[in-house]
Image (cartoon, rainbow, N blue to C red; front, side, top):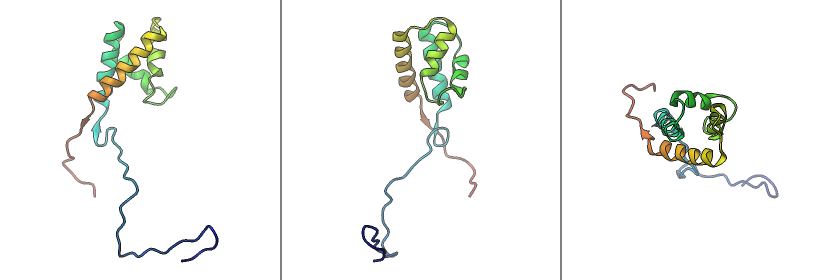
Length: 115
């Protein structure tokens, strides 16, 4: 042991492997195809709203106004189209998330290694 008071540390043996506390994965477009899921969600929203183009809505998500995941982009899109209604916007945001999650697929293994 070393340290004093509350700052006492126990030197651990390097012979015993400890499990990690957490493992983090970068899923979006690394392990999972996320862009096509977002396209599908944008298509579903545009069809639900009955106006616009899914690529145009997708461009709203690329703006730095909010994060790439923020469904407030849908609210802005609807305002831009002159069809904003809070109830409809909330339903469109729920639809967006539901479709996006349904279309997330695991990417195939890479054919080359960079290690």
